[in-house]
Length: 275
Figure 1 (tube, one colour):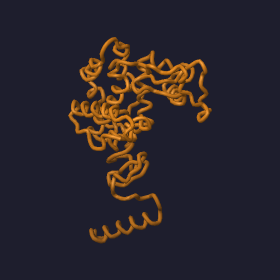
Figure 2: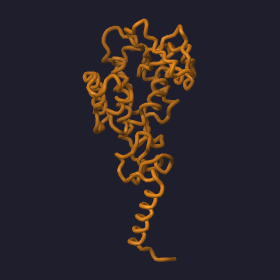
Figure 3: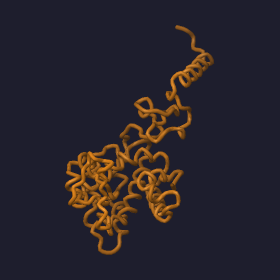
Figure 4: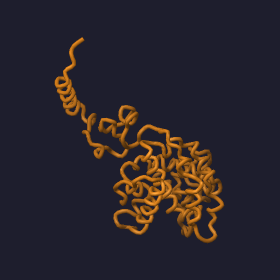
């Protein structure tokens, strides 16, 4: 057996890295997690990429393969959930609709929700989800969007002809994250066992489906940005309307709720809170 030479082996690894960086564009993107794209993982060796080598064991940020061993129900306790409900004022239809039991039931369909990365990453993700849900629904007061103009159906079947709108239905905001637009309802429905195009109201009449739809949207459109900071999740959910100084009060409302929930979970909120 040949003797092990640390200096020789280190030089060999460096030369291989230089060769791969030059010969295979995009294979190595540098040893800095901040350089990773939103849909890439940062590996345990600080390299950006996709697949098990990057998103598997030791993954530091991004859409890391899960689930980890965090128990979401242990974080979202009855006291935590009811603490949100108790903030709602007046006669709120959501108070008798949104329940922790429905939330826990919906978790069964999305095992990676709140279970990617470290335990602290999980707490931050759960805090972010509930911050947005609390903001969107007025502390679980509203089940569906109010004051929607009668002429606004949120139908776009010109750009999305594969999801033809039912002319007698309206695709305005419903559920914890206020799902909107025909194409979202269609996909959310096909993934959660209901006809989103012909029965969008299901999101406002079945609490378990309502939470499943919110989790579906989160997993597909938001979770990948959690590692970039809470501000990135605001941008993913409503960036065109609120970010870049357009609606600072609404952005601050989301941030305030997020930092409050992080404090309750005993975790630092991280950087990049605003968008």
